[in-house]
Image 1 (cartoon, rainbow, N blue to C red):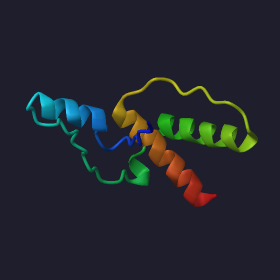
Image 2: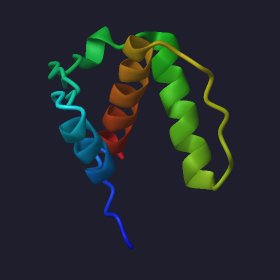
Image 3: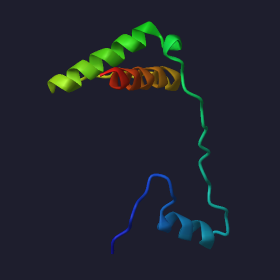
Length: 86
């Protein structure tokens, strides 16, 4: 038995279980956010993005510290800007 798993959809077993219990399937809300302007990216997080991009291009491993979602967004935006320039 093979089950195709997708990160965006509920698994068939979960949907079946909810149907048997006569409950609605819980869906996760996705929040669409606007782009962060290049000038608004935190300089420390922009430096981390440059460091990550440099290590990846050299084939080195990178330790990424834990961070909040907003900080992660700044790092990802810095990586996008780095890729657009290079």
